[in-house]
Amino acid sequence: MTGPNGTRRVVVTGMGAVTALGNDVASTWAGLVEGRSGVRTIEAFDPSRVESKIAAEVRDFDPSGVLDRKEMRRMDRYIQFGLVVARQALDQAGLPGRMDGALATRTGVILGSGLGGVSTLFDNVLLMAERGPDRISPFFIPMGIANVGSGQIAIAFGMLGPNFATVSACATGAHAIGEAWETIRRDDADIMLAGGTEAAIHEAIVGGFSSMKALSTRNDDPAAASRPFDRDRDGFVMGEGAGMLILEELSHAERRGATPLVELVGYGATADASHITLPAPGGAGAVRAGRRALEKGAVGPAEVEHVNAHATSTPEGDGTELQAIQTIFGEAAPGISITANKSMLGHTLGAAGAIESIATIQAMRTGDVPPTINLEHPDEHADGLDLTANVATRRPIRTALNNSFGFGGQNAALVFRRIDG
Image (cartoon, rainbow, N blue to C red; front, side):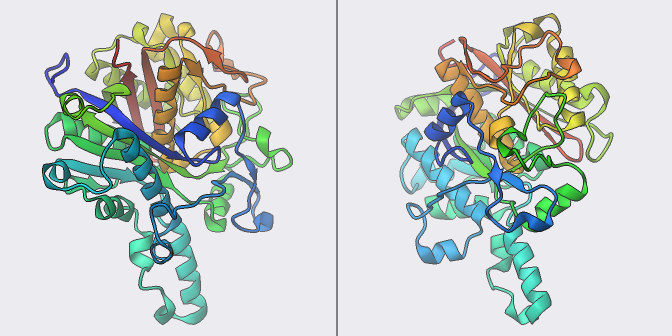
């Protein structure tokens, strides 16, 4: 089945999530709509030596439904997250526990991670320094490298189609979804599992971001620390988790009786070619990504009702994104409901684009727009915009844009549309 530009149409038929607000899509979504913060004092390590002592950690995570104890010891936390959200998404899509035959050969996986198995990497390097290289775990490399999460999903569930990882810092999850969409559109697969996973709350990573002055130091009030679009924002809050979508060619989904949740109609990817950490002036790269995604989906700016913003709570990034939104949508911008999920989830780095895509889809399906919490004094560039401050709102949403931007100046934009529209 082809869309307006003659290519195959791609729908979402399943989703899975693990976040600081819950270990599945339903609990994560409930927390977002309630405006509940998942940010607390760090428990993964003693944070006394780092400047930023807060994070949005996944709690009570139990991968035993997918992995046995032996397998858990041989997989980094980021891989475990990926396997759990993959199983959740497959279950919602009505796909089998293990694929075979034509289903297996026509199904692929793109699971991205910005940093991969950093805890495994750092812990083994420290062990080597203290006790020598002969004490390094034989699983050091396969637990640590960023592509193995995608590979382990295929091993666990039998997918034989295209399989790789995207790595583009905070744009990783969105790039994975966009590239999986393109894979189906060009007929290299009928089904793709696509998303991002991150488990990087480690002393070295938090210390590194702290040295860059990128993190919030509002340690005395963790729940109020992540404050996208607020003039008093002082940096992002580390988060962890994973998100996964099942993307499927529309007629394939219909033939097997699957329920399409939404259609993914547009994807844009650009580079700023400007600065390694700061966005291009005026959000020029973000503008080009958003416009390209709208163009590929044959969507006009006035048709978009909702934007899930990247909005990390950094001084430079948030204001620039607001400028970009104003530029993309022009006179239509005031009528768009904008939200910043990182106010509650923290910044999940390589998982952010996937988790926020799930939130975007849920908003479209339920009519609930989650709030941007901790928004007390809006940024100067927010004039005339609806940032869904502090309380969720309700409205019908047929078309939505999800933004993701990464260090290195890498931008991705995804456009979703209700399948019943």
